[in-house]
Image (cartoon, rainbow, N blue to C red; front, side, top):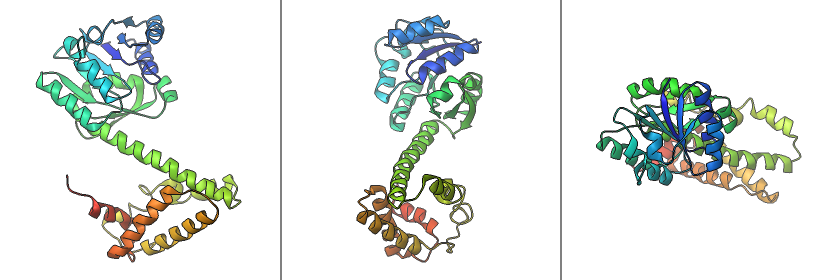
Length: 293
């Protein structure tokens, strides 16, 4: 049984903290929402009057907050975590914040002899209630090994993201893709509706093509990831089809900003001589346009 300071009892944080109590960990919680704190104490947690008090004597301190500004505030402000954090304790930030903020926090803590790792979560608040979150652990192997028993009270899978800062990095890349795909999928389904297609038909078709399955596990493994850009489906044909769809969408008054952006990118790639390559060469076009860090 570990002694854990938990800071942040919002929509995700509250059920995560409750799961730790269910697994018989000793929890001391802090949040500005007194109602959430009272509910947590009724489950068996102790209430701290400050982030410092929640951290004092804890083996682990977990922060689950809405943004990086708040994470930095509860750690470094007066009566913050830093004032109560023992050198042996591990501070685990499970918030979704800017990677540069996370790096700044880690370096500032390490400069003071404190231990920090990022471990943002995937999935939803419903998964949090059931202790079924995906934990994206950014930290040393030693830190992740040490924290695993605690983390697996809140989730049922830990992915070692590759070192400090890599957990929040993969979380944000994943969220970017999910959000963009949500918008792109919305454009596609509205266009389908305008064309009189049934949703069931669209779903059936998409479930068997890269449109629904995604390119990571369909088109890329046998072409792009093998360095083979000989065409299975030529990029020029993809660009042509996008042009037809954008023309059709315009005539049907369907706004397609995601489609317009994709069309611009494919047109650029074709202009750069990639038209006869496989359509997965779009990744190489983006790589070529990316500036070095």
